Amino acid sequence: MMSGDLSVFPLLPVLQMLLASGKGGQLTVDHPRGGELWFGHGELLHARSGVLSGEAALQLLASLDGGTFTFEPGLSPPERTLGLRQDAALHWLIGEADAWAPLIRTLPDWTRPLRFTARWTDQHPVNRHQYRALRLISPDRSLRMLVEQTGLPPRTAAELYAPLVGNGLLEFGDA
Image (tube, rainbow, N blue to C red; front, side, top):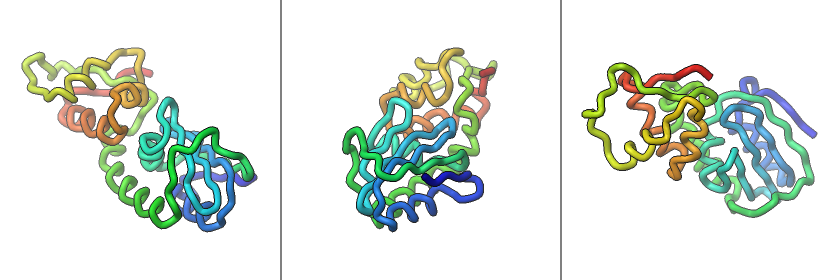
C-alpha cells in the first residue's frame, strides 16, 4: 500500500507513476471532489466519484488540487468504464486540469450549497441548461450534489454555475 498528500505530491505525477509502473490496483482520493481510480497494465480502467463513473468521474477527479490518497495494489475494478493507455490518459488529464483551474478558483467549496443573492431577479436571462441547473438549487444540496444531479458532464455543470457566482448572482450558503 502507498499513501500520501496531493498538496505535496500532485495527482498528475501520482497517476503518471502508477500508469508507468504497469501495476494494477485502486487509487482512492479523500477530498470533497474525490473518488477512486482503478489501474491495470499501464491503463486507466475505471473511475468513480460519488454517483459518477467513467469519463464523468474522471473529469471531476481531474479537478483535484489537494486531498490525501491511498493506492492498494492488486484490487480489480468493479467494472470497466475506461480504457485509457498512459499517454492518452495523461494528455487528457492535463487538459482537464487546466480547464478546471479557473472554475475551482470561483467554486472552491463543494461541500456547501449555493443560494441566490439579492442581486438575482426572475428577469435575469438564462439558457435552457442554466435553467435546469438553477432549478436544482436548494439549501440541502451541496455544490457537488448539484453538479452530479444536472446530468451534464461535471465541468460543463461547473461552467454554468461559475459565472453566476463570479457575477454575484449566486453565493455559497452555510453547510
